[in-house]
Length: 618
Ligand code: M6R
Image (cartoon, rainbow, N blue to C red):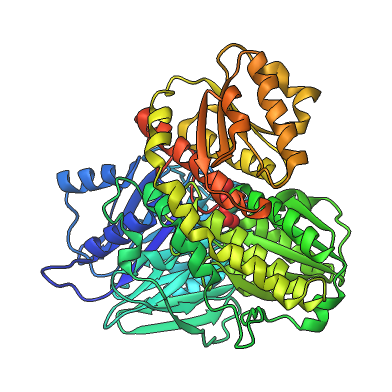
């Protein structure tokens, strides 16, 4: 969840280590923004600065009290786990002798025992964090072994849990040492400079060459060298790859917020995810799937594991995959799957869905599934991420970097990729003929244009949203694939506008939730296409039921659906589309609504309170 950056390179009058670190932190701030801090190795020893709050607070502090110029350095932006977001708890943390500075992402699970041990030995703690334990241990180990890399090796042997640690020390002005266990860390290979980062955003403006680090590895960088070993000291040759997006993809491109930009990139996210999937016979080919087709023919059950928005994408996919492939599909929150006793075996395909590919709950779920003999296929947006690497097979979404904490374009790309998987399985297992698969692909191919049509009407949604900034609670109703869309609409409103919002299956209304409706309660209703009259008629009845009890109805219905007009206070129109394709359209007004309502309330749309983009702790 925290953002971590390390730098080793030359000082030039135009670019200092501090500039590079601050730029990296700005790009990583989406990972956490409770506090920020840096440490540099200077000719006068370590120099550090840290502040609670966003990176801007740190910049102000540095402007007031500039640090001496340093050679190498480390920087951190925090999402608080142990200890409140205060100056004291901000990273870096220093060893007792002030010779070592440490930053950390993750949770050191045995920190309490280690802290007690250190307290017993007379160490004074200045923060409430688990990280400070690592700083003191490292300082003490360095005093014994005299080498930062060796000291790191000794310390990680004592730590339990998930962590990425970066450290610099006053006596080594040329190096940064990092270690990773169950938490992300990548190396950026520059020209006469090298980087460490939680993800490639940390250094993408300076290089697109990166090295994947594996579990339980230690890396030492200088300006012109990178050395990687296992925790056991054995040398490792890491895999080098080229990052396929550039820095411009991660800037706002004229939009006031990343979220608005990413909402408007959705047609491209869907079309890029569909791109290049057909062979010269017109058959669907998923080349990147590294799974034997015999295995895919044998599977008897699919379980989708994911969290948050990614789980709702899985819910949508369940309707399509069961319909096309006649394979039972379960969708389970990854953290629940992990800690019950799920019935999975070698005939189960576990599909992990994750934008970041770093969500710890999802990662632990796939490890658990693999332990039970299941094959794991990951639908992931981030190349080289941990989930992508640990899964047996990967199907990449091509949404490009998603920076806003609220997921939008990744959701649409995840549904698209899961549909490709469903159609591929249907083709492979003989549930659908090639021409039927081609028909569905043709429907998918029309979606980018239709999504654009919905975006062209964003102004109508904005106007309604801006008039509702005093709403205290909003309900969302949907049926069939509209149900997960209702859940997603409610999640977007909660996380962005801090408004109590609930999504319900419309059929469940009379079983309890309708009691929440009172005079003026805003209720969004996602109306199914008229191509499914049995679903459509029921939802139109649901609109009437809530309206009869005083609800203000905000209806999402396809163009030409006049059956809803009499019962809708507001109608947002979407182009006509087959039932299974509709979520890719109906969710868009809900994203815009949440974004605009939050903006009307003066809230930070890209960095909502208490959240972080990647949840890399359990
Ligand atoms: O990176 P992931 O897709 O694994 O993230 C999963 C959830 O944490 C994420 O979708 C979260 O719910 C978003 N904030 C929703 O907007």
